[in-house]
Amino acid sequence: MKKHNFSAGPCILPQEVLQKASEAIINFNNDNLSLIEISHRSKPFVNVMEKARSLALELLGLEGKGYQALFLQGGASTQFLMSAYNLLETKAAYLNTGTWSDKAIKEAKLFGEIVEVASSKDKNFTYIPKDYTIPSDADYFHCTSNNTIFGTQMKHFPKTNVPVVCDMSSDIFSRQLDFSKFDLIYAGAQKNMGPAGATLVVVKEETLGKVSRTIPSMLNYQVHISKDSMFNTPPVFPVYVSMLTLEWLKNLGGIAAIEKINEQKAALLYGEIDRNPLFNGVVATEDRSHMNATFTLATDELKDTFDTMWKEAGVNGLNGHRSVGGYRASMYNALPLESVQVLVDVMQQLEKRA
Image 1 (tube, rainbow, N blue to C red):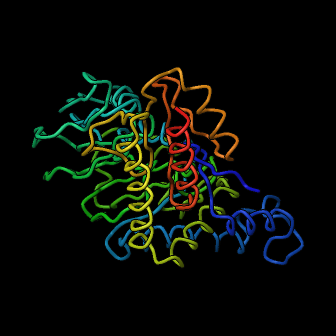
Image 2: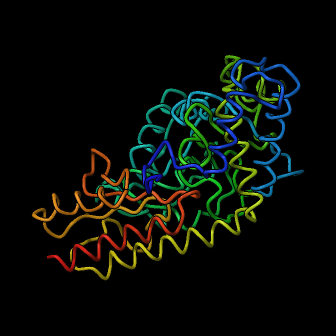
């Protein structure tokens, strides 16, 4: 029996996606060849890449709006520098809401002046800053929509006249937003879309080509666009699994449908955290992430008992990030509501024992 997978990443994937992906490893497209041994230039895989890119734009509501979707490599960590390489001419504004924002700021400083418009570091990133000012002369504003480690999520995005860049690695395709408000979105696939190895980049073409520096080919978005995301050998298997996951999401009813399910999962778990005296939520209530719920035990004396109970119930990946501690339940798109109920049941059983 498959475990209830609350792992923060690589993420849980739909069972039907795993089944199709495993079949493709043996025999892809009924060609008696494995997906991972065919040429990436062959028509069958080119079709996969085209479909994956098209589905990404379709689900985000960005078809025909001047955007391009790319599947690249290097994770969000490479996008920290690649976004700045392509967009930062003089000065950029950054909102610091956690570890990944910190890392993005560090890389961007290599290319120009960075204005940290606000930070929640003063309270160990347990809230999302509000009421900050973005300089009107900034080349762009950068934010992280969901903070996997600390369990916070931006519920509102600032209105600004400068281009907006967003790291959506851990909540991409999970909720409805006006994605046309963003000029560049990037997301490592392994948090909510596929296996590790691919990174989705969605960029508005008119935002590019405005910096004076010479950009190396592998780090130039315009080069990847001109080659239909096939400038170099792409991560074939991760792109294929991402395509399958996007197909699954579309067939489910798209982002609107999955958002309702994600809201149910979050309400169920946070409701128990707030009700049960043995547990405490970590972050500000209004900034709680629907993807990564962080919480602690009221007393460490119950840790061994609780850990044994959730593991015996088939729950996996519940320990908090090593830098934070406590617990973290990652409720990505493919995690069923039933798995959250199993965890809640264990929490209630612990209350009865205590």
